[in-house]
Length: 371
Image (cartoon, rainbow, N blue to C red; front, side):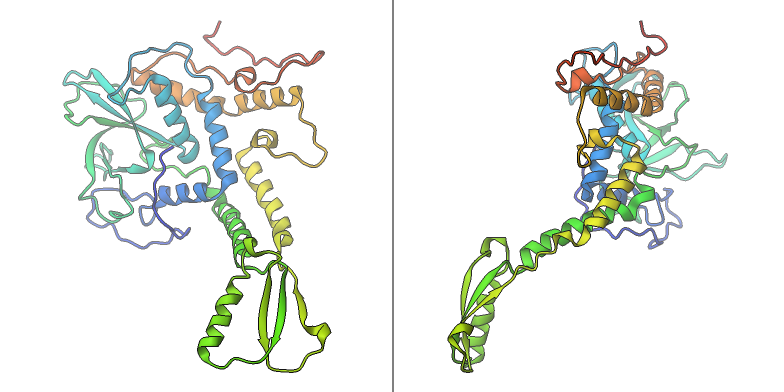
């Protein structure tokens, strides 16, 4: 996962920029599509948790055979690159590596390339895309490629032949032939935004609402605009949870009975207003990502958490992410990073589920090539 502070982007995909004469193929109408997807994920805790859960099962428990030799100057090992690739694959349906090679095509080092930073170059005369452009700030340079760094493109399935690339080459997986993928969150952009808006409403309701304050009325009226302004400033002190059950004194310009001196100001907390909406958002996100509610920490009233249930959910998620593990295995093998298999996630290695007599563990079937 590569987090970027991009500010508030509108979650729409209408054309806003033109790319005539540019060297890149824009990713979305305004070239900011992956940044919008990342923002939508970060603002929705449910979507973020679902993507993290999926990537955790895709990387599993790492490769069956690993080396302690670092793959780059950052000290990343094979399983470190596996984790970064799994996170991007589950968020964007793609991932990228920077491969440094010598003039004979021998790989020297590997770096994880943030997927949202890569853009296709324009096709050549043969209709083939052979270059990519990388920028760490497409938000600023959305319509320009002048500050982007150009790299030769390594497409999945291509052999690493002799390549004279002083800055290295980029392996770019999109799941499509010379086309950008849609992010995992694409079909529920609006739902993710709704998740964020409900949270904002709840926060604003608490911060800007009165909370069971008591007003004590004092005879008299405002003698000046300044006095009225001071009164308004005092009213503001009644707002917010920290001022709940407070008492405030105000001037009154009319006669009142003694029984009218005190007035209770009820709380206007409307936390239940969006209960139905919240439940619909939860159901939509869980259904879209196809993840078990229990592994997301979501339990319905009366639900029971048992060892058998968690083992079944782990087995399901291992099957659910099997195809994605295959994608990463083929990519790592083709690049010469690691040609072993990825170990499926084991529930007993992940959570302390103890032992329950009469409830045997559910073991996944062995995969091809495993003993």
